[in-house]
Length: 317
Image 1 (spheres, rainbow, N blue to C red):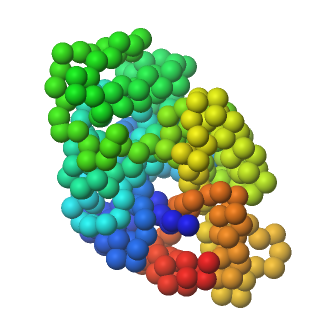
Image 2: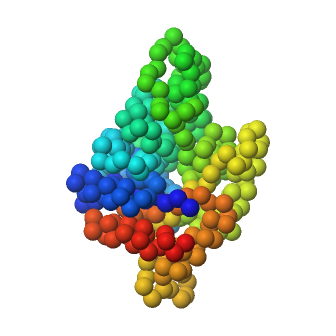
């Protein structure tokens, strides 16, 4: 099992010194990934339903703060040496695809091959409208096309593309990413469309356990999703073993005495959490991401969680 953690995009843990301290600590402790989210603007009025809270409220609406994802990861690339940097997730339609492909390739070069591109189609109509993007209803088709364009730009010596939303030819696109044949892609989301996309183009499927519309928060539901993923991967003419599953949980909580009743997965004693990790590993999950930014009050909280995971929980697995 490989382990990662999500950083906060707002609050005291999102200050430059805090981000640097947390990233270096995770690097030193041997975590595989650090992850950061993506919003360019936060509209003052949001009617769109956020997928990962029970009532659909977006947790970032109160502060309105959102640091630009690629700038944050570029900053942290220079603060770390080994840990991999994950866009978690990049809302693919938000950026001009050639500009995004160039920024991602450059970041992979500067980090010496440590970038993972987590992608999603987006959920906030108001943000799409503020950015002047293609129609919100077409975001899935836009995402699929932009990903194909990314892969063409990253791998072809003479990149050429002719699609509905973009076309290019007669260009030089350098530098190419360090990682070949192209940057690894994690497809975020729990819907059937997301699972289909993961089967077609993903190196990993990246679900979150707290989506009430598409619940994946228990092993049985996730196992059904993994079976759908395998079917979609085969339908795309690929080997299901080529697509990993990396699961993200919002429920991590270490309690010295354990939890005896109504215990969520990844909460409880060291032994209980280790047993949960083994359960998910048996399902075929190859990586776990703990949402430390969401569950931590401050920098010290994040550092304590990292230390506990690395020195107590992970060895017990």
